[in-house]
Length: 367
Image (tube, rainbow, N blue to C red):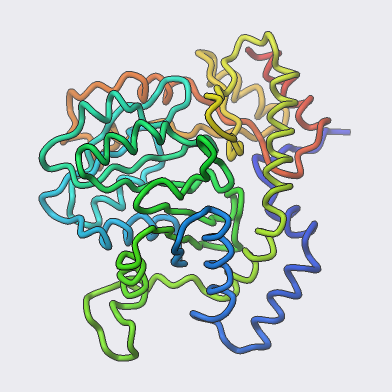
């Protein structure tokens, strides 16, 4: 008998494990007839703001829009520069480009893959208006150093928390440090919707008011539009599903950390570099990412065994065709080295010890 495949994530399995609660929540929304800007979205905003430790939360329709609208609310636009780590998903830079501002790429720490404060400091200029600190793979960036640099240079700090809901740094949760904390609830995230959804946390009441207008066509009074905005509302069905899953986030994140600990145990002494934890906070393992010069051979070996794996990310942002011409000759060695060596293994709350052992054995054999 052929062994069952091991996927990277299991959103269908998560649904099955919570089916009764989710079906009840969805049925409640459908029966209400209220699908946009209703009590489910308002409830999710309150619950997540309290959890993160932010004064205000505004639901939007994706993590990308969370970043984009945060920058617009901060009055970022043409002529401005926003510093972005080069090793992250394209949306982080794309959101900057939407505003007409210029993304300036800084290097990452070679161990954590998060924004390197030294490279950030070198990238600052008179045109810098904001910094986006991405908390990649579930671990926070060096927020104390990054926040100090932002305050010293009077620039906005935006946290890209798409992969780290529940992570903390020096006792404070991700999303509570910056002027804005931007979250994605894409289905594969630690808290995943059944489609696209996102949220912005902010400390400033004026920023909250701007975000609520921006997500709703620039309007806070029906048919009166104070500015040009977008259609970026978090719908009630997604909010209801997220509220159910949020009740289980702590145990799901604990399950991810247990799976990561098992990987460490079973890959001890293996010729791959395991994820580095900086010891300043809780890593919630959105991804379990190893590094190896034999990355491609390991990935092929896993595929032959029916084991999924992913390369996040094979091409740094400053080498992407969309930005490459403007960054020709720019060297960001840690980002480039990471792109050549990283491989993410299956990890999700339902991953059991037998699956981890099978993945680890395949990695050992190939490494």
